[in-house]
Length: 112
Length: 186
Image (tube, rainbow over all chains, first blue to last red; front, side, top):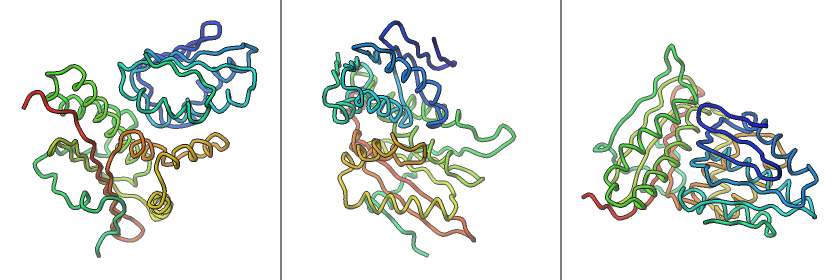
């Protein structure tokens, strides 16, 4: 399944969800379909789920809230390993992704 | 009447007259969400040019200017009363400065000032994590998360001035500054 508009695309392949482009939606309501898609994957019985953010150029604070909410959702599941792949190419990732690790210390944050 | 100021007071009074000035006007096309993205992209494109001598410096400047501008303009669009949004921006002494002015109603003003009170006595990084946890169990928006990320993750210096206008309306002026990388194209 895929959700997209002219600026971004988000889709899942097996247990990995890919984010691509610029996410600048207006708030929790606008992000709700994306939340549902990924929440479904988290509850899909996988041992490990990966958020691949290496194509995520820009994210507004409502988008950061979305990633944080999903991280908290994953934190509640004892037998699930959440991997977050990011890149130093987009400066927001090194600034804001370590917050996810503070929310969920067992999260495997890979910033390349 | 003197405005009520929160945050770094010296920022609130600084002149941005030599910067760039933009006005977003309510009109037949309406002032949309899209315009805040377009406007912040435009500001980042123009202001980051002087850093184009270094790829790393340019990426950093472009992103930080874009993120800061976008959050401030998104807030102005989201919480404004009908009317113009005035934006001033420029690079001054190695920092990017932006000032956004719009009108808000009394309820929004009271709620916002409450958040700023909390901010004064707390570490923004801690407040950010706390706010994220709160947001995770509620569906309310307007949580101040954008301002908290700016203060915590971008080390932004910020000032907010509230000035009573006519009746229930209040003029909110937000000024913010972030340090820029060393300029390679003086």
